[in-house]
Length: 260
Image (cartoon, rainbow, N blue to C red):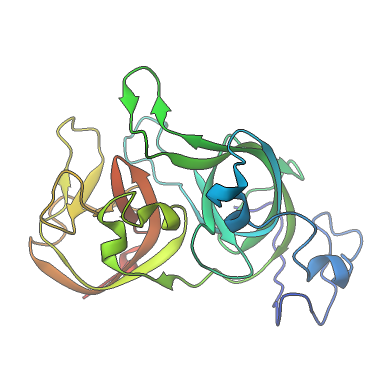
C-alpha cells in the first residue's frame, strides 16, 4: 500500500488543470512538472536495439506502474516483489519493462498500478541466471537498481491488444511486449492449468500445441489454481503482463483478466 494516496486526473499529457500536492503534502507540484513527460528518455527509446544502451545508466521519465507482484507462487518469498512499468504517454513496441532491486524517493513510497515515476538506473539485457540458466540470444530486459522517484498518480493503464502469434517466441515478436500490459482475443488454452515438473508452485496453461516453447497463461501475479479450467477452454480475451523465462507468458493479475 502506498504511503500516500492522492488522485490526479490527467486530461492530456503536457497539460493538466490543477497542481497536485507533492508526496509529502507540503507544497503543490507545478503543473509544468506534473503534466509533461519530463526531460528523460522513453522506455521504447532505451530498448531500441539501435540505441545500444545495454549496460548503461539511463534516466527515464514518466513511466506508469502496470503491476506489482505481491503473489508469492513459490511460497518461499523469492517469487514476489517485481514491479512492471510502461511508458505513460502511449503503449507500443518496447514500451514496457520490469525493475530489479529498486529504491524509492521518497523512501516510504510503496508503488501500485497507476503510479507514475521517474527512473534512474542501469538498463540490462540479462540472458543468464547463475551458472546453469542460459537463454541467449534471448534475454530479460530490466532496469537494475534504479531510484524510482514519484511524480503523480493516474488511472491503471489500459492494455494494448496484440496478436497471440507475436508471443510464439522471443524472436517472433514476443520481445517487444515484455513487461507490458496486453490483451489477446479469442484464444484457446489447449491444456488445463498445471504445475511444473519441479512442483515449484508455478502454474501454467498452454496457449498453443507447442508445450515447450509456446505462449502460456501463468500464475506469476495471481493465484491460478491447478485445473482452474479444463483443457481446450476458449476465452474471448486474456489480459495480463507479458513476461519471459524461456518462453513467453501472460501473467494474469486477477480473475477478471480471463473472459470466457
